[in-house]
Length: 457
Image (tube, rainbow, N blue to C red):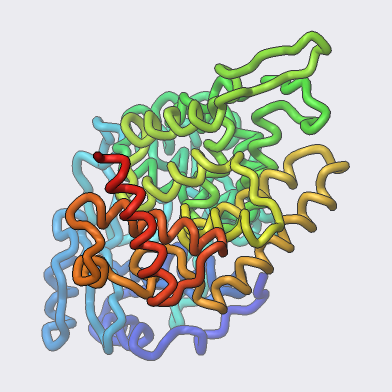
């Protein structure tokens, strides 16, 4: 953590917003995440300013700037300065939260301390002014140095005001790599059912960020009961023994390790979380006491579909991607040109690379005895995929060097027969028993059509 605040870190357009407010006789501070990020040595992604100027006074100060009425009722406008949006909010005190999410009303105050007291966590409740220096009424800098998330004031009150803060606490712990202070952690467990009030869109946003954090495995393990409120479909995995020589962990612990080993990508991490969710319902023991999970990939896909119907709100492209990964996560990818090309034709290059990445993560969550050999095989499979991609091999009908119109002009069928013949040509080219050359394709198409016609007679 940076020990000194150096005002040169503030971009000049943002500094200009602060200066204009100060020159007009108002206090102005950068507040919250941008200060936290800079103290941690990161470049802030956005900048929020808090001030004792009322909205009308802020609008007057920036009358020559584009100003967006972001939330007038809550004292917020967004000033656009040299392409940088800067949210400027009047010091305020929030009223009651009857819906457990938004304040029913706000009142404006002239005291910075009142404004900081309404914020969620101490690491978001400090402010910095180039003129007045650093303001930290709740020990945020102390918590930042110790890498912990702690609520401002009474955690039960904070979470009761806005239940989304429960997921935000876990998201910060995961993304920042922080622990959760004990009183705050106890309150998270105690108040977890408040999450049922939160819209699916907000749950999805926070959960996906949590999953992509470096601390996702630890947070999911420590707060599995909290996550299960918004994803009840994961509960059967908790503590479910696998009774398998390939698996030294129960289903949930295996899942956590797969999540941690998967690349920090939304689709891959969510697929890792759900890939074995169908195992408990598919479990059987053989006569030797060894566990089996026949059909669990299909069962997991159905559970993932239920997650997308009832629990999360994903865009269609991400949902399709995750379902494909879950459905085929157990499909072998052996290091042979024939198998890799077959998988490439079936899934396409991007999906196959995703599947290889998920396979690697899946192996990392299994018995160490399998790790080295399986990873070496996956490395070789990916090397073969790289070669095939470099060769621009034929993997779809559109890659064939012959078209349906060419077949028709050659007297090779029409209608449905054309599509059937093209698919057969693609399969044989993919199996490398047929060259992807016009004359070879035309000759083979005539043979196929001849057989096709005889079967119809």
